[in-house]
Image (spheres, rainbow over the protein chains, first blue to last red):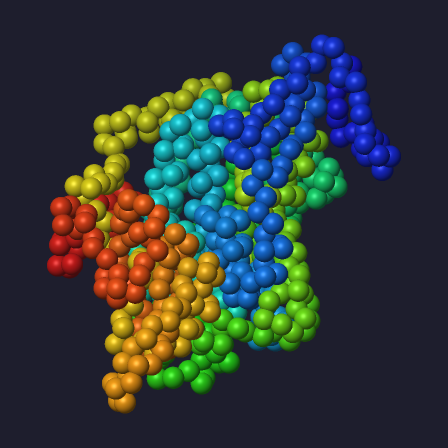
Amino acid sequence: MSVWVYGEQKSELGLEGTITRKLEEDLYEVFIGPQHPGSGHMRIIIRIDGDIIVEADPDMGYVHRTMEKLSEGREWIKNVPLFERMAIHDACNVTVSYVMALERILGIEPPPRAKYLRTLLCEINRIAAHLYGFGIFGVFIGHSTMYMWSFADREVMVELAEKLTGARLTHSYPIPGGARRDMPQDFPQAARKAVRYFRRRLDEYRKIFLDNPVTRKRLEGVGIIPKKIAAELGVVGPVARASGIKYDARLAEPYDAYDEVEFEVPVYEEGDALARAWVKFEEIKQSLRIIEQAVDWLEKHPREAPIHERFWAKAPPLWKKVFEAEGRVKLLPLMANLKLPPGRAMARSETARGEIVYYVESDGKTTPYRVRIVSPSARNAIVFKYIAPGYKVMDLPTIYGSIDYFPPEADR
Amino acid sequence: MPAKPVVKRLPARKGLFAGFKGNVDAITIGLKYLVDPKRFTLIYPNEYIKLDPGYRGFIVLDPKKCIHCSSCARICPAAAMRMIKRMEEDPKTGKPKMKLWPVINYQRCIFCGYCVDVCPTEALYTVPYHDIVYENMAEMDWSLETFVKPPEHPTAKEGIPVKYIVDEEKGLVKVRAEEVEEK
């Protein structure tokens, strides 16, 4: 009987048809999911020898909604609310790159104010998504205090997003050429208060969760992904950065206002579950910095419509009146049947779980010819197969929680 | 100023009493919130959140402003908005004339607010509440008569309006809506 480690498994990946293998007699096959409380809508089939995982097989696709095909039947702008459904608590991050791809085909660049507004919402979403991840992670390993705390504190960020966009979760905020609303007058004050609150609160998070000896014992040295293997598996986001890979879409190809704001990309070299938790923890701190800078910038600069001239210059007076009164950017009726010139574009952005890539192809019609999405969770799911073997069954929730796998985003 | 990657190290656990200190810290924080809990539970429906005017709640039509252009139905990503034909008397000529009116199906609506933003005359507006219960699905498919007036908000009749405000010390705090509006 052999433990299926990375090197051995790789040799069996030849394209020789279906591989069938005889299950050894003393191995138990355990199906974790799809209704298991610890797995969400996915199933991991594990084979165990005693308490040690010998083989793990992630079985994805329970929430597949044919999103790429659905998008081909919808007008360009209607796909924004559709793609949001991949990760509704990270809505701006997952849709901003689709909108950027459209802007590249149209050949327009949003005004700086729109860029800052999008960046602001992206970072609010990132904190909310990381706290969501922390909550799920906490309850996976039996730390229900962390679950309660982070879901309560996530509400602060959701409240800010609601002030900014008018919706708690599915904001549908970015549109080709800009953003849909300017921030309300009382927003900067609330945002600064929230930032100061989080700075103090994160210290308590560290004490009760990350530095708690009970938690540390369960996370330290579990699910180690060495740097070389992380690169070969192609993992992204906090999983890659916890293994010492200095990669972030905001770093590799700064989009929106990320080349103007100052922030760090935390990288850890240990590669275990604890390092992945710390990457997310440090990222929340950096996101707070970005929120502060974005709010300062937006306050200093004059309030003007955060949308490209093409959709604003010829707008009727009512459009300007509504913007001044409510800060709402009205859309021109042409947005519904927007025609993009033939062309193809690619765009990527950094969501809370890693890099999301859109490939958009237009053949000059009002609907896309093809939209290809590569979502971060789909790329990180491979960790189950190669990293989980060799650890105890009890460690599987730790590995699952630490890579922050999100089924709807992976299956799309 | 572009971002820069910074390699960090996990905090080391050194010394004989490292684990002890960690336990004491965690228990102290736990005890602190046991004595002084940070709760903001909404006692619904005795209380309800009074949402800001910009909130994207139920969408209502102002028939006086509508110019029957179908923009809202065209932009709706969920196909919730559709146009229906009505025979109406033309005020100028007095003859019956076919007109298009939008109606909304709240079984499908995703509250993205595109229709409100695209309306060329601001004939569509949102009301800042969303907690309306229907007894059956058919009721959610609104007729034009229902669509032209704001829906009844039953919780507002019985409940106390509260607001959640961001606080530096406690994160979110629940306060009476009147107190916020006074400021």
